[in-house]
Length: 493
Image (cartoon, rainbow, N blue to C red):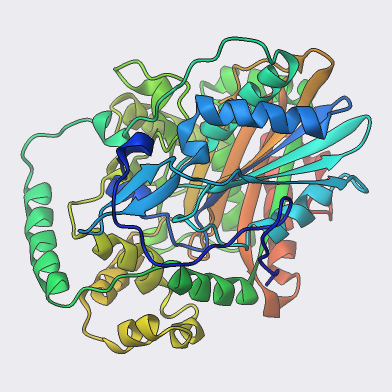
């Protein structure tokens, strides 16, 4: 793992005693259980790469970033734990985000930087939970942004990059602070259901068991697990890219078939996976489909920086007896129906003891993946040896809920492409990944340049076998979409 040092352009990792008091001057709000789920996990980062034409000044960009952090408070926040171990966002005494500039030497250098940065843990208790890499040349540069999912989603990074370039080109403009929202305020409130009643009973019993012998995790525990994870895995991705004329052609095809581009691409990847790897089985015959709550909520939501998504979970099986476009139409209808109802079953997290969610989401689920990590701290040793701990049984049951695909499509962006003498050429979106989900997809389009990423943690002891398989899936998906000639042996074309 890279060394963690403290200086202007190096990492600062300050590990000390927990500050369990709340200084109201920098208080933002309490974290929801959903946000807290992503604090400690090794695969909880959301990333964006923006290719920008023009000669960017590092000094001006850093000055613009100082302003953008005022507009979007969570981008410059840390997490404070109170006496009851509830977590709160705070902007008190938070250092500036890590920012480095490197000279561009290749068109794919952004992947090397992303692979390096994504394996370095954020420390929520010092913050901020975002970092930047500018891969610079005088004619075109790549801006890489890596951020913890507890404070952002894909559209958050889009808005941050938009505002960053806007302030860069117009630094004297008046700014407006956009305070973060709590996504729970926008999720539909269901009435009584037997399922929810049963869940409350189950969680009530789990909480009572947990409170008899709770565990309290910190940054040292997270580092132990994350270092072990990234010693075993490497972040990797395969891209499906369409040029403007190709995107327009696909859009015409989709309109003729009554489906969206997003539904067609998702169906193409699922069909391709079935052809190359085989059909999904058991619990993997389901999808989780994140959508932007800002766009769909019944209450108006600003271009807020934060975790602001909904996500339905539903069963879906690709029917090989039907045509590709018939399958895409079935998928499109189901997604549209669920999103219109703001169906967000996968985002609902039941009430629990504050540290129960830490244990379940970031430590219990990884016990079998990186058991060696649980010898690195005394706290993890005790937790690992407590085999009857309720979170381990929950983790075992949660495996039956893992879907075959999580497609996160931001769609065509409604943001400017041009900022004075700078122009966004394309963007690449990387949602959170999982070693248990076969298809982790991230889609975004700007200026009719569409890019879908197929990202995954690749076992280091497998060589490039997994990447070769993912390339085959991408190539077959291109064929389903009508672009067989775009097939390539390269992950990034």
